[in-house]
Length: 427
Image (cartoon, rainbow, N blue to C red; front, side, top):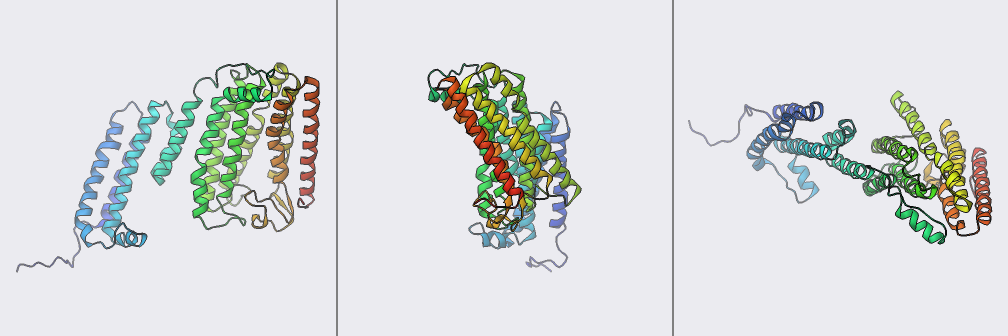
């Protein structure tokens, strides 16, 4: 007997759950072809960007045709989208949309990386994030590509930075001749500040009394300032510093270490977990140790420039470079080591950022070793600025001025550290 009843008691021949499982397997084959097969194998992209996305497109089209009319909702509001994807067919169609387009984006990343001569191993973080989170991987890759292309070749044209024309001309010359490799790393860090700041605005969780995204935001800004300072420090240290092995190693150590540290800090922020002082699992404990090694490398890597400056410069400029690097290593590094050896940077007080100073979170109820660590590290910027200004004076007067301020800065840093160790908050 003919019937026009569209309902079926037995259900469809092909269930959405079956399509979901098969699509996952097919998409994974595309990613494996992209990641595992050598670049010289032409078929890898034909599989990843051709055959598999087309198969997913066929399944997607069938799901839309069979299920669109029975789904409620729409794209005009969050409630409408939620209602739309309450249907299994629409939900699986959306998932296939994600699988196909992320694989296509991964192929574009692979093609761009080959043209930019970015190695397969260096590409894995971006491809992994594209596989898991789509646009996040694309953002990481474009940042990586931008930084890598600007780090190629020599750090800068070899130009002489003279001090005879005054401190403004000296600073302008140093900025024009800034090491482009180190400057590129600083630029890459600044490129991830906007999404981190937006995450802080969207996330209502707290970690140790503060928004979990404040820590990565502080690290991004602090490391960007540090690398930008080092980029200017290279020409100020001496004419041949830019072409030295020291500058080249600084760039690659900085890029590798910062990438690893920021990926971990951001990953832990997304989980709402600590990146520092976290020994809750063996892996997290290991990563905390790895970050400690990275921090030591970042502090020590510019130290050879002090010797370069000592040989190539004189007067206030030499004193500024040498004093800044020594403060950075001896005080910033020392208080960083003391801080890392403890279970927390707080000593006494309520042990939370909730009552601390805005943004930096420094404790107002007890000791906080981060203050001395901060002063030691950023003594580099202060001494360098004073050295550039003092370089316009007579050499002896400028040298005395720099070392006088450096001694006062060191005393203030040690005082802040001593008060923190005694559990006393700064007034």
